[in-house]
Length: 452
Image (cartoon, rainbow, N blue to C red; front, side, top):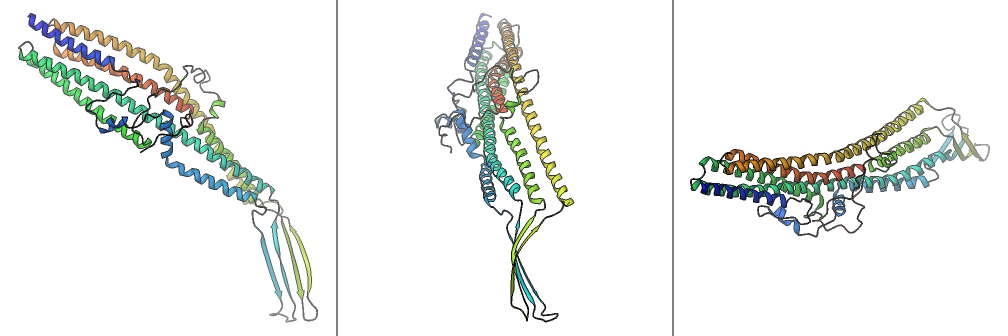
């Protein structure tokens, strides 16, 4: 009986050593990135580049966004509007030519020639509207660039934290498999010595196989995360420091009003972009009003008349045409344009509300996360206590192997939950800053690392 007790004690010591190893190595924010022999070339290649900053990762993503081609389009539209606004005769000049003759009627030899140009009047409002639109198109280009930078920041944050979380899961799964592999070897020796039943070895091997399955699944998940990261960034290494600067004071984001201040909302890239859409709709309404409204016309020309008895007589002509009233189609067109302005105003209000609500929800999640981590910490301590009791019972021959394995798996799961919570805390900080509109692209103006 003493031999069996010493073997059981050895098993328990090995199990505890495995737990100590896992607990000591699960700091997911460590500067080093441990490599496992089971990792494929996707993981082992991450050390081939100098580690970029988080801002440089966002810059790399920004360079790969297909929407960047639209920036040139906005520049071209702004330039075209600038040319139009500088023209004095934006609507052009009409040339009128008229010839009259009685050659087919009375045949007295009378005929006349008349020619001139018709100039539209009242172009001041139209040119002013074009000037404003030209300025807006230039501002729209800048606002769209900030919107794309915000999009790139979101992709960078999500890609980095997805890899970090997958790394933590794989690290834990690898170490968990090592613990169960060691346990299986010990149980196998005890079974050969006749100290343990064959069932214990079957259960231990089953636990080891399950751990191996979990490791392979975690490896696949990490490979997928790396593939996505490399696709969006062209990089094959993560930043050394992924935690962003963050103030724990969230009172301004979760106040009794349930929203952040409008002054903060107005600076958000999505809100700024939509505000420009409102201004552009207003500018297009002003231009449409100036273009569609009937205008007075000045005609300047000359007429020359001649018949068989007299020589040619020439006269200068100055004529002004003044429209009376406006057609019904003009009022309908203005109503349609005004409705477009109302739609953009509604979209702006929705954008403000969406940003306010998103920031508030992310802030509330951050506030509640502390309580969640405390709960996970308590669960970790409780699972440790359960395992200690199961180990003691196994040593005394009172606890079966199935109970000990269950306690061990619960202990390992609690450690995994805690490790993931560390990653998710940083991920939630990044999500909060993203919803708030913090731009990673412009935080570091140094040259981005070379992308593949």
